[in-house]
Image 1 (tube, rainbow, N blue to C red):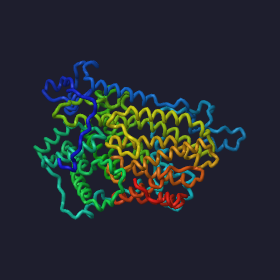
Image 2 (image 1 turned 90 degrees about the horizontal axis):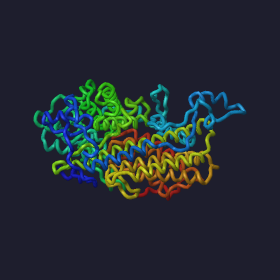
Image 3 (image 1 turned 60 degrees about the vertical axis):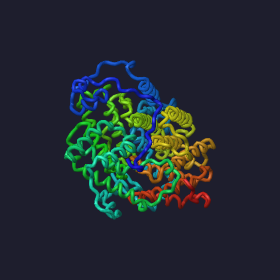
Image 4 (image 1 turned 180 degrees about the vertical axis):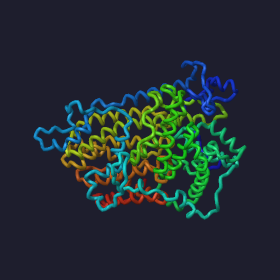
Length: 621
C-alpha cells in the first residue's frame, strides 16, 4: 500500500475475542463461518439452510455484551422520541374547506387544538413528506425570497404525485449528457485499463474499505477477499462476482482520503489537481467495465445483486450524479423488498446483519435524494421488523484481522446515522407543518407554543450525542473532526439543531414584532447553521457530497435572508460562511454544472443583503 492510501486504523476500547461457534452447515462442510445471524454469508451464497446451536447471552464475550447494551440504549432513545407537547394539524378535508370558511365570523383556524375527529396528532414515524417539506426548494419559497429571486429562471419537473414543481435549481432537469466524457478532455495521459495484478487490485480494495465501506458497511472483508481470489485466478469474468470487484475498485479509485485539516483550507481549482483527474479516470475505467456485468443484477434477486446495485448508486453519488444514483438505489431497494417478501429466512424478527445493513443503506440513500428531489416514491418503506436495526457483527479479532476494529466502529456509525435520521424526521414533521400553515393561512399557532417542544428535541439530541461511542463522538467547531465518522455525525447534528430552530428564524424574518425570546432562538438557529458551513469540507469527495452542497446552499440562503432584517442579530463571521459556500460551489462546478444555478441564488440574495463591508470580507475557514 502506498503512502497515499496508508491510514491508521482506529482502535476501539472493546477487546474482542474470537467469534463463538460456526453454524451447523459450515461445520459439516468444514468452511469458515462469519457467524452472521440468522443466515451466515456462506449459507446465504449457496442457498443452504443455516442453523446454529442454541446460545444464551452468557456465550458472548464481554465486548459483545457491552456493544449489545449500547445498542439497546440508543434504540430505546430512538423509539422514545415523541415530544410531550404536540400540535394538531389540518387534514386534507380541513385544508380544502378553508377557503369556504375564511370569511365566516365564526372561523376557527385549522391549527387549533379542538378541531374534532378529522384531525390527528403527529405520530412519530419515518416521514419522507416531512423531509421534503423542509428541503431547499421549499425554503426558497418563503415569502421573503419571492421578489429577490424573481429575476432567476425557474425549472419545471413533475413530482411523485404528477404535480408541477418549479425550482431555481436545475439538477433535477439537467443531467450530465455523457458521464465521464469530461475526463478525456482534461487529461493528457495515455489510456487507462483495468488491472488483474494483485497488488493493484489490493491497493484499490484497501482504499474502498478505508474510505467507503466504513460508512456503508454492506460488505465483509472476508467475502470480498474470496471474490478477489477468484478474480486473480481466473481474470475478469462476465459474472456478478467480477462486477462486484470492479465496482469496489472504481470506488477505491475515486474516494478521497479524509484529511481533518481540509476543513480550514480554501479549495484550489480542481483543474490544478492532476492526480485527482487520474483517479477519476481510473475509477471511470473500472466502473465502465463493471457496467457490462450489471445486467445480471437487474434480473437476479439475491444479496450479491443488491450489493452491486447499491455500490453502483454510491459510485454515482461520489461523482455528484444524484438522478443516476437514485435509479440504482431504487433498483436495489426493489430487489431487496422482493427478497424480504418471498424468503422465509428474513421473516419478522429474523433479519440478518447483512440484510439489515443493506436495508438501511439503500433506504437512507434513496430517501435522502427523494427528500430534495421528489421524483418518485421509495422502493423501501418500513423496516422488515421492529427489531431490524443492524445487529453487531460477530468479528474474529486476532493478529490476522487488522480490520476488526474498523468494521466494528462502522457498525456503530451506521446505527448512529439511523438514530439521528429518525430524530431529524420527527423534527422535520413539526417544522414543516408549522411553517406551511403560516404561509398558507397567514396566521397560526403561537410560536411560543413551539418553545417547549424544541427544548425537548434539543435535549434528546444532546443525550444522543453523549451516547456516541468514542470513535464517533465529536468536538464542536472550530476543532476539526479526526475521522469521517465524526465529520458526518457532526454535520447531521448541526443540521438538526438548525432545523428545529427554523420556525423561529421564519417568524423573526416575516414578523418584525416578534418577541426578544423568539429573536434569541432564531439567532441560535442561525448560529448552528453557520457552524455547519464552517464544519463542511470544501474539496472532500464523499457519498453525501451532493447533499452537502444542497445543505450549504439552504443555510447560506437562510443567513442572507436573515441579514436583511434589522432587529435580527447575525452570528459573528456569518459572511465568511457565505464565502466558503461560494468557493465550494466553484470548486465542484467543473464536475457538477448545476452548481451555477446554486451560485446564482446566493449571488442574487447577496446583492440584497445588508451586510457591512467588514462582514463581506472573505474570512479564513
